[in-house]
Image (cartoon, rainbow, N blue to C red; front, side, top):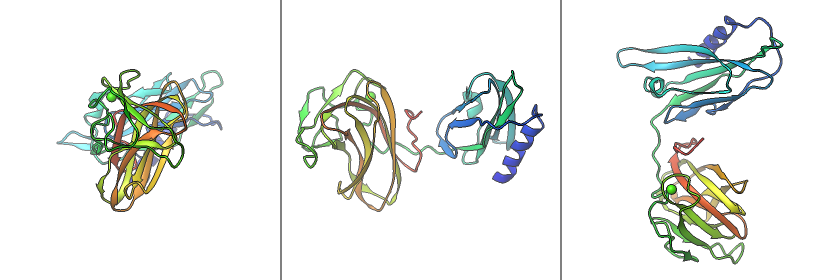
Length: 286
Ligand SMILES: [Ca+2]
């Protein structure tokens, strides 16, 4: 089926305005190929040397009494397009939809076609982290290892294996990515907050928005009560950055973790989201 609809897309392209070929590529960037989406996507691509774009989609529409693949195409001068919610409401669940972009240079009349990406409207996996928005807790500083952090439901760990910096947590009020508070954390390398439970063998995705004032922050998944853990760190300072980590683990005790990545780090973390599957269902994902 997928091959068939890719072929339809190619035909839609070739029967359109294309008369000459060019070598440069239009590259699709978002949503990622194969993404399982929980809300209407904003399609985005890099346009290279092209200034006009033919946006082509083949949606799987499901109106209840009728369902079928439905092609749509139109020209845009922008390198992105936000799907209207009225369209999204009609997209059927769990059937692949396809999209591609033809770039056209109005000066040279050259054109190029992107690859074809797919997405599905899935049953969005829920956030398994409790108080991942850090709206509950205390603005008082909590210092050092202990069973509690400043954020209700999150425990706090001082990783003295790496350095002697004591982790400190408090609810932060600025900067905040969503709501009224974020997690304000001071610490050293791999100091962290965590939320363990008995978990099934599966692939999990943890994601967050991280604002590193100094050093870096991270999100990760710790397993076997923290004996095994891998992380993904933020890479920039002075602005909110989306950070995501995917890991497949065996049955055991573990869960999401987040904290400071380098010695003498100060970070704010918000929108911490932990879900089943290899794609974040977080509303804070780009
Ligand atoms: Ca928040």
